[in-house]
Image: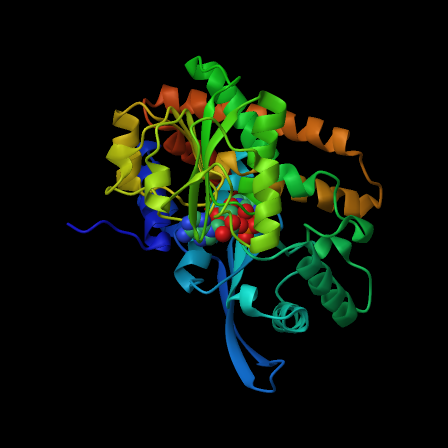
Amino acid sequence: MTEELDPFKISQKQLYEACKISGCVSDVYNALNEPERFVEVKLLMKMDDGSLKTFKGFRSQYNSARGPMKGGIRWHPDESASLVKALSAWMTWKTACVDIPLGGAKGGIICDPRTMSNRELETLARSYIRQLADFIGPNIDVPAPDVYTNPQIMAWMMDEYEKIMRKHAPSVITGKPLPLGGSAGRLIATAKGGAFCIREAAKEIGLNLNGAKVVIQGFGNAGSWASKILTNDYNCKIIGISDSKGGIYNKNGIDPTKVLVQKKETSSVLGLKDAQEISNKELLELECDILIPAALENVITRKNAQNINCKIIAELANGPTTPEADEILFKNDVFVIPDFLCNAGGVTVSYFEMVQGYYQYFWTEGEVLTALDRVMTNAYRFVVDKAKEYNTYNRMGAYIISLNRVIEAMRLRGWL
Ligand code: NAD
């Protein structure tokens, strides 16, 4: 039988399994297996060369029982309705897993921002918000950056929303630049939250992080900050890094700062002196202590799970591991820190950004990171203990916790 790789079907399969393990009736699964609302928009745009182009955009609002919905906006050529729905489901479980008072959503546009000018990016950002302004808002649904979107794009989006509403509304969006009400620590939050989980997991399995060998797939916001934090805070040794163009490897260690310079100059990690070039496939199978998928979904599947040669997988990416791969990794004693726990640092600091925006009172980076550590460490403990209680893998532990929290909110509201 061929392996299911459709992201939304995978998310539904995971939910079904979690419902089964936690003894939920089928009504609960049916109440939770589709987004509350899915909006598809057509974006018309004049390009710099005078041609007229249309782009397809999406917003999936999965569940609002625990609070305003929250989720990033991804701009990618492979964006799809199925992926956006899956990511919005995972956002719902993520906010519940770290117990912040938010629901889950996600957005996206099918486009390749790497080939677009700044003017084109701004026009696209504003056009997306014009189409969706009626569906988002600080108390409804709050977007944020994701793959190939950034604080500048969030600033344009916030500005467009405020123009439409004719009032300031900084908490309509998070991941904003600092001078526009962004939060200290937001840029590093996803990687920092993942690093807190890695610290706890290392204690759990008796791994010394000093000199621990780390491999990172994806060198964008999440992956590049992870490489710096793990090197600077824990003295880990980064032995492999990749991006969309390929990977580099050096068993004696790679200096992440040099890779950042290289990537800035050439838009690729390839070509670094003293490192051997390898494919993304080879990179994932390198012998190491910690493997960090920090790019896209479905990279660890039935095909390569058996060859994964690490002690911990820290999923900074969303959906990098398929359900079949999960079973294989569990049997092989690989300790997986599941995506919606491991990368929840981003949404947690986004939540802090919303709180600071409501009060117009801003915290220091130290205050943000101390609060983040508390949230992540608590969530980690809950997940791992729940997985042990049910003798299952960590992802199911996380699902059981999140599912119960969402169900409780829905019951209290009288939805179930
Ligand atoms: P980004 O756009 O900053 O970086 C993405 C990176 O992935 C780039 O280096 C790109 O070259 C690389 N990449 C793309 N295709 C690849 C491939 N086939 N093989 C290897 N590398 C590839 O995005 P990001 O914000 O770092 O997000 C990365 C992942 O982390 C995504 O799954 C995202 O949903 C997840 N995530 C990010 C945040 C956040 O705050 N940035 C929060 C939670 C989850």
